[in-house]
Length: 341
Ligand SMILES: *[C@@H]1O[C@H](CO)[C@@H](O)[C@H](O)[C@H]1NC(C)=O
Ligand SMILES: *[C@@H]1O[C@H](CO)[C@@H](O)[C@H](O)[C@H]1NC(C)=O
Image 1 (spheres, rainbow, N blue to C red):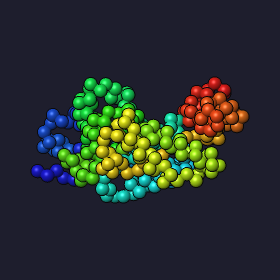
Image 2: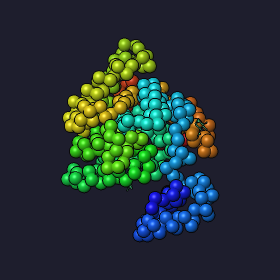
Image 3: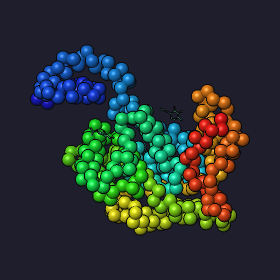
Image 4: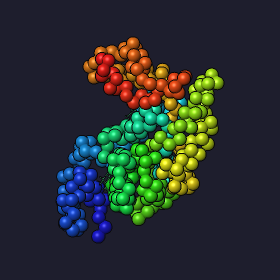
């Protein structure tokens, strides 16, 4: 018997409530019968259910392009390239009803330049629940996959997680932090999900988003930024083509980087390499001001430029002679602010 549409809908509502476990032992026929009996009663409440419980539905998942654009403009500092690429990539992907492969972004750059932060901005403008969404998954190499000896169990676990989560919701997002510390074998194991397959084992991964974060390539990005600075050219003049070869080459050639051993790049599975420039004094000041503004909206005093400058002066800058770029980017701003305010 082919279940009627509203039965499927009801079962789906139950599934969305996370009660699959409870109905699993019951045969489908009974479940469908039950569903039939309950449909009339529950269907009218469906909207209310969905309203309160995060589901894989447009009420909870939907791209806000204006939101992402405003966030990138107002909250991310000193990253004209990353800003532009991210907005274009995510907008293009989310407005495509029929993508041929999942969106794969690889974010590269020095520490504290905003890679994690940008992933968060993307999540917040796709999922109502942002990073707290149950459809957003973060894996940190040193945290989730610390022991090389457990590689094979990590592999099957990770594959199961990705498959299980995408089966639940095709609009899932996976963030892999410290990608450069991830075992090449483990990277290999996720390759099939990034590829142009219509379906793998009955599951389509084409509407998912994969974001890789790494410091790989960071040093060559710094070199380029420093060259521009030394020539007295504006940092906003740095073009993707000034970095593209250096980033992909260094990612490729750096043997410590897992990318080297894999054919992620070779097979063009990464759609966009996104470079993050090292941050200068003025950007650190902007970060501090933004953080104070956020705190002000939570009841603390108004932003104070003197404090922001104090915080920025406290950080360490490199290279030793010129002291142009913040060693830790905007990373330690929060704790520094706690100290000064
Ligand atoms: C999208 O983002 C803008 C800017 O942050 C916001 O004003 C608007 O309410 C958002 N739209 C939706 C549908 O959430
Ligand atoms: C989804 O991923 C998480 C890890 O983020 C994992 O704990 C969970 O078991 C996965 N769900 C499924 C259904 O595989």
